[in-house]
Image (tube, rainbow, N blue to C red):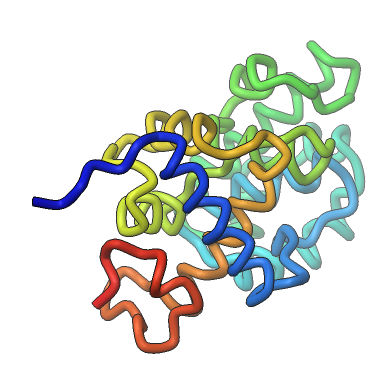
Length: 215
């Protein structure tokens, strides 16, 4: 029978995993190109079901045309749909970008808010997006749980949950707050390079000895 791992032991192992991944990926940062918190909000909304590479291609021109919250709020919805079409789900994304921008102007004086509650009240902004903004735009620790983090949290035995909000809670419970933002980046990079959904590359995995799912 496999021994049940205590929460303190799980937290210690999780930190060891992250420290090993930090050696593997020493310069991790947000992959979405942006200059302002609002641009990061737009890019993160566009990143749903789309690669960061594609989003950065689209926003390269988008952020030259729309240079402020007000520019996005005044955008023509059909034109914006055409401009973000290649990111998928373009109608919902364009509508959310417009709605989010207009509410930031109306409710927050054109300044992107800095709390989870205010961010998730904006159109198209869930906890994952809010944590991206908090951690990468404002330096406020945020645990981003995307498909990579969900998959690795289960494979590494950090959480047995399938709901991203509950996985976020499990990770936050075992990791020091100062690690939350970086942990998300490290797990995402590890998921892409070594631990994809199909055929994980255990033979090259830098944390193989600390993973209960290895091989």
